[in-house]
Image (cartoon, rainbow, N blue to C red):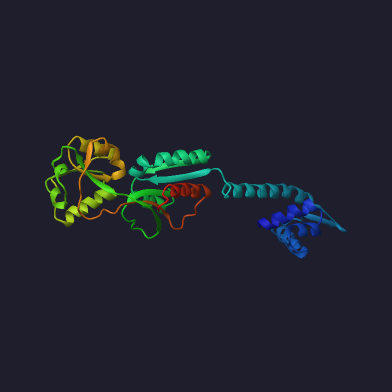
Length: 295
């Protein structure tokens, strides 16, 4: 059973003849006849009585056409629900902690104002967690801060470079130096985030490559806690500059004059290369891109 067969059946009933229905649908009359004959063969019933030059639905045809009309209506509704004009839907977004705290609230506020009927669901983590979720279609889009996405089946789009900062308490001895390099970390305590975080991986690899072993690594669960630990003088840390601007301006933290290799982190959009982007997702991506005009 094909949609065009149902459309033909409904059109013939509405027009009252094969000829007028054919003209309306843009088919030849033999094509319409073939549609109805194939449908009758599949259903094993006659749908029309042909009485001279007049046609009428049989009782079976009258019964079946009510279903055909409902099916076609449901198809139209389904198409409308995901069309470019759709005003509803759902997006599942994976976001890194930095993006979710610094940039995501204002984006979501604007997005919900423009699209109040679109449901947004959030999950938080890093690219290691999001890779499996994107691969299995558990989330639609992720926005992360990382250096490079190592998965070839993911599409990545850099929104902006994300300058990083080594931070310390204002009275920390390193804050008095004109420049610091990797060797200065050998006697320091590092406050770090959970495993899998891109900038934790960067500092661990940097220290390992230079055979530098800090005095300790103190692991905490979120970057807000990292700032408070550093302010309290418990160690130094590396965080995105955008996340520590207020504390540096307020003289609660100091950005150390790092002269080592570039850290190279970027805020990026990531989604599966084979993902079909719904109108709701495209609207969200359009809004995000509009906030990074220099991309």
